[in-house]
Image 1 (spheres, rainbow, N blue to C red):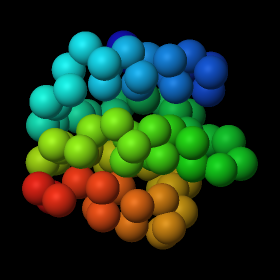
Image 2 (image 1 turned 45 degrees about the horizontal axis):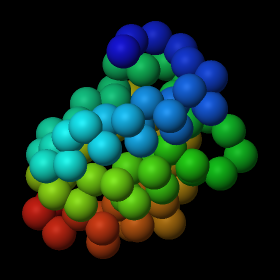
Image 3 (image 1 turned 90 degrees about the vertical axis):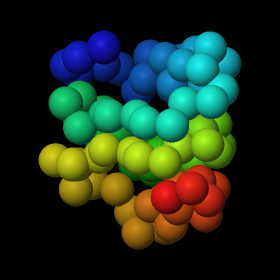
Image 4 (image 1 turned 120 degrees about the vertical axis):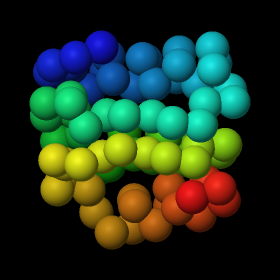
Length: 80
């Protein structure tokens, strides 16, 4: 999926991907515009909660993430 999406849809898409691909090792969300620009880092939290086998997460071009959310992903994905 590419471009802007409503936050509710982003959560549903991330959940569907997690259910369909539990062994996902690479996720590129750098091309998505305004993906996580709402008050708390729900999208990054969803990634941390769902993709424990990730080896690479591309979030380039996204500067809106909090340090806490990034640390949560790092802790949840031991293969980083």
